Amino acid sequence: MPSEDALAAHIIELSTASSWYAAKAEWSLDRIYMNYETQHCPCGHVIQEVCVIRNRTNGNETEVGNVCVHKFMAIDSKPLFDSFRRVKSGASDSFSEEMIEYALRHRLISDWDAKFYLNIRAKRKLSDKQRVQKNRINEQILKFVVK
Image (cartoon, rainbow, N blue to C red; front, side, top):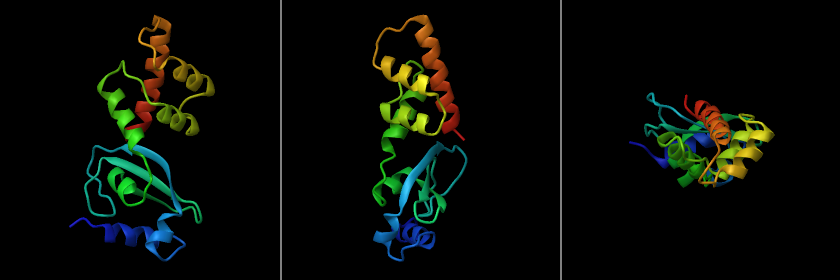
């Protein structure tokens, strides 16, 4: 049965701190991805929305489900996954500002791509050239997020 206790034990084992509350404060979101094969969160749940978290004090990494990382560790990856799902379901949709910043931070897109995208993301009518560039950037990000 999935449990917060199993998640806590896993995180504490990889942390410098020895208590759950102190240990979870050591972790931050490093990257996200979608995994359509069977994968389990340390709590025991089967997950598709995977958050790779990194311990800021010792450099350890682990993979946790989006729900657990948000619910138990107070790391908010939900906007990134919401943005991913929205764009994946409709090619004309735009990624959120958070996702564009995430993509830039992970060097999935260039500074120019980020500035361009943030400038046109809310526009309803794009020129053909703008649409081609936006679709190129969308594809770059989508490829990185799907494992």
